[in-house]
Image 1 (cartoon, one colour):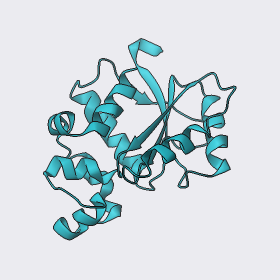
Image 2: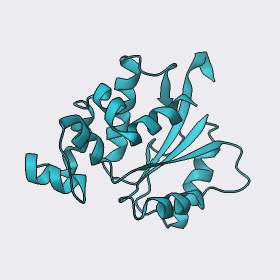
Image 3: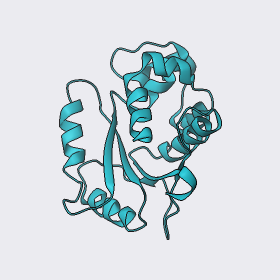
Length: 174
């Protein structure tokens, strides 16, 4: 690792998730919330974060392999858990796409429900089935605005009240 920083590749399900996570990482680094600087590894010929929309898709296997050729410290695969009833199945599905012979550390990170749970937790909004539905009802949320909410997240509140955020920080610190 160069100068004590950690270089990662993010593979995200959400079309707007890439920019969202870029902004989250930037803020985490600027606020000194991580023990070392975590940055996105430069990839030749593709963007980082990489967008792979469907979990059960052979493209995910290929993207993990391709990302590993740039020798990042960690590849983090980010998908929605879609709630407690499907979380473990989706986690295992994502893990099944990690090539067996890969040398790079690959971590699977699932939101308990979906990416919008961080926004809800930051704003103190509760939900019944989907955080995004509740945001649409309460604040006229549009998916295309997702990246702008990264700048508004209350990291202290998330550390206290959001298991998925704590898990994400844990993966970044490994």
